[in-house]
Image (cartoon, rainbow, N blue to C red; front, side, top):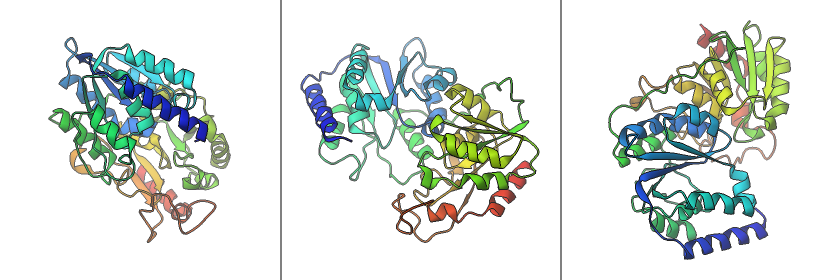
Length: 370
């Protein structure tokens, strides 16, 4: 982040703190979720429980969501309002940031919920300052991530309830912990599957996700996907964002004539429909794997050792009957848990990803299709 931008953001926070006042209708609730598509997928069943805790008619639920996937949330969640927010613009364009904060401030929110564990002070906490809610709930996060200076101060100022859970817990366990802290009880629901896309017959295709939300170094080489999928005999939707056009093109070329590259061609809602109605979804450690798993689709992910336990393996004890647990293939390395600060190689694909063989992935794919 540029030093000039850092100064501007810090000054903006200072001004917002000086005018901060609590208020609003406690039954008018703002839920903030601004992380990636996969994080939203893992939160989706827990978001569904909020409607039971805060019934329609008495409470109004508004989701401030990452604009990258907000259109999918609008179709899948029974909330009263949705506020798409472009995270990149919010952090880099002061005019957009000011306009967004103005809309939030005028919303009359009396309660704010921050279910993201690793929230960012300049993002989620700034939104809480703008909302000025009478009550707030957010994780109490230990360590250097949040509690250095400004972050710890804002946490105490903005949130009167701060549930605690260990940072190494799986994301779904963090979501369950937050829900229980709010007072949600009972089983976690399985989301209703979205309808298939008209041009893709339900169960008649597989989806390949050759990109990675953790960058190119955490992505299995795309040409290997074509070899692993050789002879499958099913249409293959090779999907991802426009930024992932290069690996998508390379993987589709290797997968053969039945592969269709879809880089940046689908909205989040269309992408969700494609995933939820596939026969199989395979790819790197990326959000689409989690989304498909929650809709009962067989999935396979090539994973590394950066954050073992945070996303894989799934904790099956409280997800039984809710999710079809993804299968994973990963290179066995003694340095697992490096938080992607690799000490084994300074360039190229991470060794724990590169060590995964075509034969191992092909065998898992064949087994899942059987």
